[in-house]
Each structure stands twice: as C-alpha cells, then as structure tokens.
Length: 295
Image 1 (cartoon, rainbow, N blue to C red):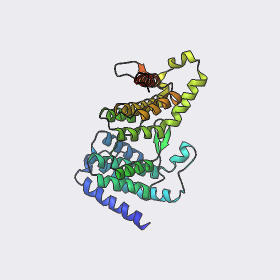
Image 2: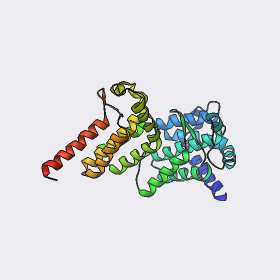
Image 3: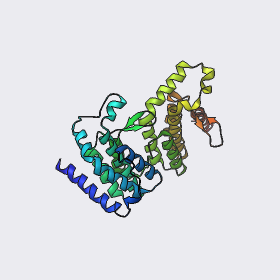
Image 4: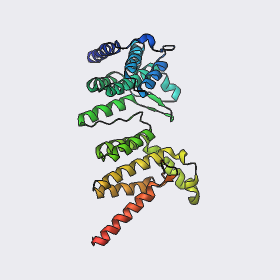
C-alpha cells in the first residue's frame, strides 16, 4: 500500500510541474464532474494538445483520486452486472480512463518514462477501472496499461489509438506499407482479441440466417466487426507474403476463408472487395507456382 501511495504522490508532483507551464485559467472545467473532465482530456489528446491533457487529468486526480481508490478497495475483481451497475464505480472508472489518456499524452510528448510510470500507476492503484465504449461495451484501462508495458519491454512501439476496430485496421495498413511485420502482427492480434468473438458471431449469423445468394447484399456496415477482423488478418497475411514467408501467409489465408468468409473491405475509391476471395486467389496462385516448378 505504501508503494501505491508513493507512486500516486509522484504522479501528482510530476503533473504539477508539467501543468505549471500552462495556465488553467484559460481552460473550461465545466461543472468539474469527472465525466466532463475526462471528455475534455480525450478531446485535447485527439487534438494533440498534450499540455491541456495534463491539466485536465491533474484536475481529475485532484478531485477524484481519493474516491477512486476507495472504490478500488471495495472491489475484488471487475465490477459485474448491467451498465448502470458498473457505472456506479464512476470515480474509479474516470480516474483510470484519465490516466490512460495521460499516458498517451506523454507518449505524444516523447516522455516515455513518464508514460510508463503512468501506466504502472493504473495497474498498481486503479486496476479495476472500466470505460464505456460507444460500440456498446466496457474496455479496461488496465489492459491498455499492460499492453503498453509489455510492448515497451519488447522494445516495440505501437499506437493503438482509441482501440476502435477501424482505427486499428488503418494503423495496420500503415505499418504494412512499411512492411513492419512486428507492428502489423501486434495490431492484428489486438483486433482479434477485442473484436474476434463479435466478428465470428456476425459470420455465423450471415452463414445460417441469410439466403446464400443474398449474403453480400445485406447492409455491409452492419457487419463492421467481421469486416475489420477479416481485413486485419488479410493485411498480416499479405505482409507475410511480400516478405517471402509463404507458409505463414497461407495459414492465415485459410483462416480468413474458414472463419471470416463474409468479411468485406471498403475501397478508397468506392465499392467493397472480399478478403476471402482474394485469399482464395492467393492460394490458387501459390498452387500454380508449385505445379509449374514441379513441387
């Protein structure tokens, strides 16, 4: 417990030093509710106004960290139940979320040591915090913190953004353009972890609840998780292919065909293409090459 309070005290001190560079007088604290402050911190982070993030998070910790720690101590695991049941731990949830935003801000400021200390504070003190996602579920700040610490230990820098499936896919495309297979793999595995179950539910629904000839005529965007997960695996497979890792690529092409056959991906110039169809084509091309070479 002593270690926990020391880490929080250190964080307060560091925040005060950083935020002293920016006057709080010009910032909008609204009604000073934790929800309002966290929302402002998110917006400042998205705008890459990291010094404002520090001030908003400092204010959140100043007002709500004691209450958040009390809520943490009353739990022996993540709060369960309905959305309203979990939101009863509002201070814990908001403080944990604020620290995730702060960690991202420190990353943006290239203050990696401070970012890692912030993520460690989440694990040490606010590990049962949960944050509501607009897609309709809760994500866990401690999982984000753990990701950051584990990747830092491996020497890999990956920006997961807001963990939205579409954002992760776009980041995977960007990494694939540089053939940075380590980053692509981390991003794809994170997409699978967060959205794979939902994607398979959507695949199952299309497979057994839709007339086969009409399966691709549904509202494509309703199958967002399926589309993003299928596309993500295709990005990894094609990255392996371009690097000459044929066996790894082929294994994933088969996975796409078997698990995410009805995934579709939007083309920048309009229209959809189907990862499973291209995967099938890649496998046929590989077989033809082997036949020509006499394998």
